[in-house]
Length: 378
Image 1 (cartoon, rainbow, N blue to C red):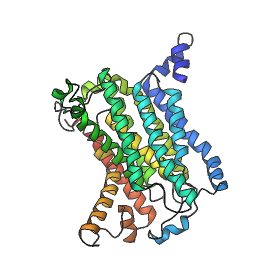
Image 2 (cartoon, one colour):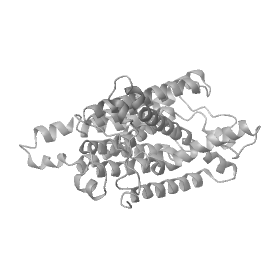
Image 3 (tube, rainbow, N blue to C red):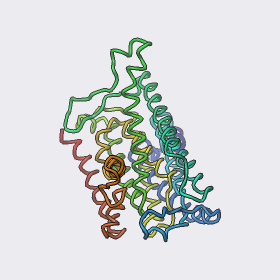
Image 4 (cartoon, rainbow, N blue to C red):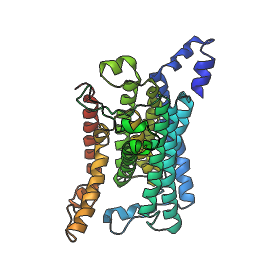
């Protein structure tokens, strides 16, 4: 909106407004808008959540030290989503389909999390949507996202070729091109891509949700991940940088930089209130929304492989749960970790909450920096 007004309409008459044509300038403005919007609205939302008694339920089988957190306002992810969407609408060029796909994915997965949180709050127990129903909703969103990408591909706005770290020319596609020419086999031809895209988004949305177990842990890692994605989206949309780094350039992805910048600013703003000891929790509405949005951006800019490093800690947390459950079922009750997800294992070992959070943040930062380093190591 502001981009259209300040640049498209007024820069002819006020020459300094040309600064709004630059992606970097608008990303900076979007990040600051998201940061200050989140900080400004935080106290009001915390007060409202307490007024309506929307508090966190703590599982009895979890760490005993967490019982004192019971009743802390939750569903703060609503604040994060508002602080991402509004700056994006203000500063991005809304003619880009990439921006709308990212926004709708954030809202879609956030809505699934909202339904889950609302069910928990109304029942006053840690019982939200059933795991099966939640997965069904998530995969519906995931396949809808994949279908939108196929429509964009048909109009020449999207490529299904993936960027592979350390390889300049190797860019595989999950589409079976020979089957796309026949309407009867088209669905089979696009099925691998759709399944892969849906799995990436569903897995990462749940991974962030599983990581959100300590004050500031997940949102701090999201600051790092969103910051890395901001760099990647800018590089992929910049002609000179994309050519220098041997990336598959797509100028339309540059507008995603504004979305990622808003996500970084909003995450940093929420960390202000979510830092230990937390005044508010993001809930599933924030965790599923942020995880889904992060994965969607990675797929849009064709950096699904780098997502393994950018979201490395999230993935380790999710894998620890999978291994724990698998071990318990297949080995007749034997566990690999003292408790899952992984951060609870270190709590059981005697690590303090603040030490776990700080060390996980450091590990997440190192992995994100490694992901950015691979852009040149090709």
